[in-house]
Length: 201
Image (cartoon, rainbow, N blue to C red; front, side, top):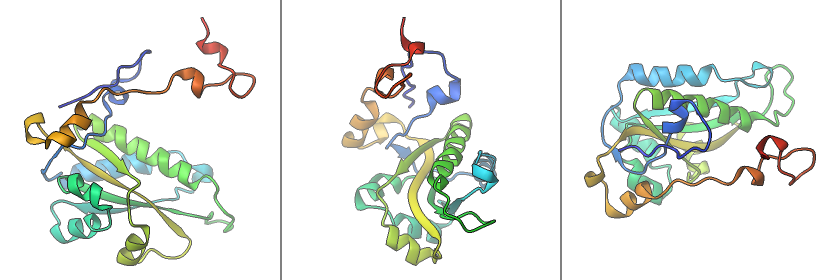
């Protein structure tokens, strides 16, 4: 099942097909594909090339690792993420390595890395669903995350399940129309709240 973005303007195919379904098929993702996801993340841009992102991997093929990561998710997320082929927990280094000054864009850079990962996954026929519903303290304790690093999010990566294999409640979410804000709500010109001339006919 796919649910491509109903875009108003041309976009590259993988961006159009990127989608975050709840209905995942419980299939193992080969290690080589996981390495490719991490390679894409590794080559994301970052301030001063700090690369502040950190990823804790829990592939479905490693039952103990998978259950450990799954247990750190909010219960509502566990209900569907249990079918992922890969769970990832993310964190950022809060300061620059070279001078230990605060890195105020660390989270931004993590987002760039995950964006790369998401497009790479889409290109390989996989889907990525990101989660804020994570027990941050549980992750820190379970993985021994040191001071100076902030636990951020979780990511489920997997194959989309067939519609008839997905519970009705989750299927309804996946089949819902995809919507986005109008450009004039977030793309401004010479002053805040004023629509950019680029989007004026």
